[in-house]
Length: 127
Image (cartoon, rainbow, N blue to C red; front, side):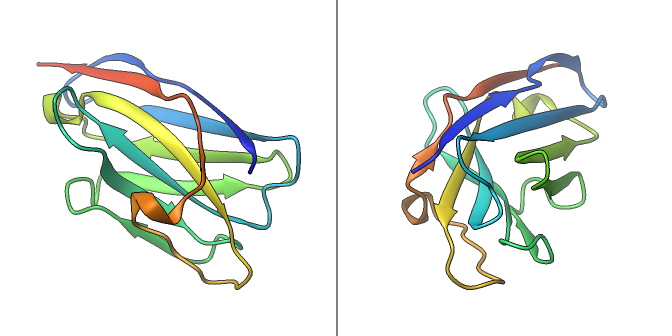
């Protein structure tokens, strides 16, 4: 397991943008498939985006497709989530997740696929 620390959340108006970051420590992030999930009050945790170990493959939840971009910079041991055209329905705590991936191209979209989680960062979108 690795330690994950998210940042970049905050209050934004509908239509605005945010970039979330997730720093991996203490080891390199390069061997991990990674993803973002979110959880709104009284709702289950929802898949947002995933990226494979080498960054070539990505996948997105239906609710954010076309508005979100996941990226990684393993030199900085950092995962990113760029969210555009934000809506009040995007209000949630956003979590970064990681799982050791032996094979390149592994994309993990289920909560149960991951064994390392950050503490979350709150995103609030006002109408």
